Picture: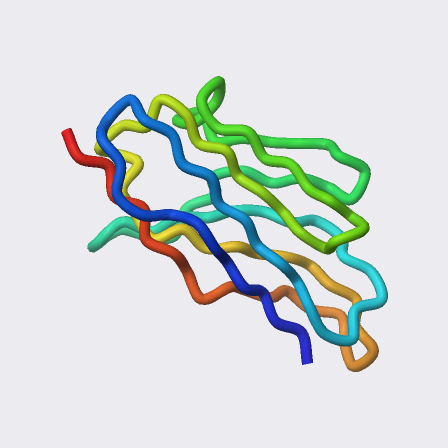
Length: 119
């Protein structure tokens, strides 16, 4: 069974920084793309950033230049460094990964972690 477990998040003032991490565990053969999504109250879940197994990245326009996604393939972990945070960044942040496991090939989600940016 594959699990994604997020850590980090919390409350920060506008202009501050936070760091998220997400560890994939279980009977993993290969972790392919990994990413972060976010969902604000009453809104849909949107892509924040994605990183391929080779290190290629893509960011939502709203976070370009402020957020940095990275990964440690040896630890099956993806990170999101968030700088110059704005109140509109407030949301539940979800980790996502495409994983080849001993049982299946599938897309997995973390449980979500709250990020709140006060003005």
